[in-house]
Length: 477
Image 1 (cartoon, rainbow, N blue to C red):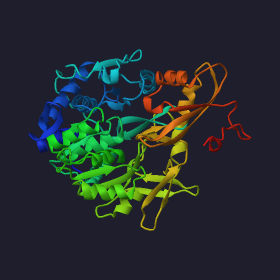
Image 2 (image 1 turned 180 degrees about the horizontal axis):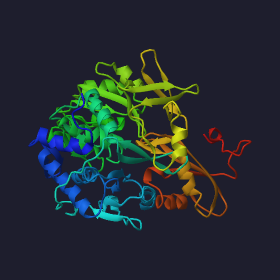
Image 3 (image 1 turned 90 degrees about the vertical axis):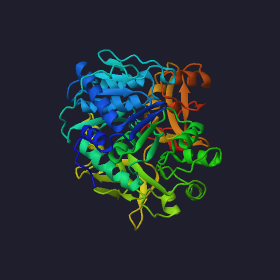
Image 4 (image 1 turned 90 degrees about the horizontal axis):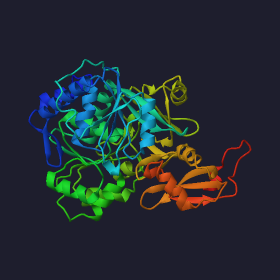
């Protein structure tokens, strides 16, 4: 049952009142109680207000998981702003594109992360969240409407450029209150936050869920399995969501550290071997394992339920969440409808209308089946997206960048299997001037996030085209 709060700032204040002196955040040597967190968030809101952030202003945050991210992001919302999380893997050019298009008033940054220093685009103020810039403001909490847009999370589309997904406060609060029940997140849990905060899984199923239930948040800036084991043992972590590769790694290193505190696992919609779920239950101390299906445009749409069999958890993504409907279109595409579907794409009514039909059904771009019990099974992706180590990569976006190279006449990208990352990109290119694969790879690394850079390049005389001039990617495969 959702609490009495209608906005995320109200949730933060309520968590400070309800959980007071309990640990809210543990980040290295830094330990912050819920009461202290609520006060630091209000001071950050006051500092942002003093810097000119006004109600409805969009503020970007391009920084790794940390206590500072939590304070800064909720400070934006508490000042009445709209949060725009930016993928930390993106290059400065990719980040600048979404900040400019979202008309951000400012961007909160962590200089030096992943060896990068960030220069904000013209007209956008950069604020260092690792400094004391947000610490000294006069406490402020603005009145915010629960139906107002709270955040804009950018997700790449098949058209190439990322699109901004708008969600309001009430949608997020209702959905992730239910998520807490499904994942069995409890007051006093110690939640290791491996999933990045720029992503719905880390931000909403992580931070918002923890504030809802009173769980201690342990942010991890960069995923490292040895460090995961170390932190689990030292901090007695109970809740550990992550991709299937995380649990594979834990099983490989079982016995090196004391993992006995672990109680709950939550994994995504990637195809999971039944044997992995069995081993997680048999060889690791997990009492509950949840799987689910979600997307930025609708949050968590389906989830497994307590008591589900190993096979159900591994081969389906569960049943629809409360207030959410799932259907399968005639062509096999998964459709989702309900209160959690986005408010639309930022400044893109055409793309919004293409994604959500007149009856409110969101086209997900994934294909799937529903069994007689209402369990969803994801079969594949209707479009060409492929997933590199948990990150979505979109061929159209990568192709658009490759075509900027002066030596390339044509380019097509597909995902190919990879033992370690699941899938990686392979580029097929037609060159108009001498060019080596290594030169193109080095050039791409300057312009694309690492997971988007094709791992292999195939040079062709011509791309296979159909009668209407479209590349036949099935031929390339």
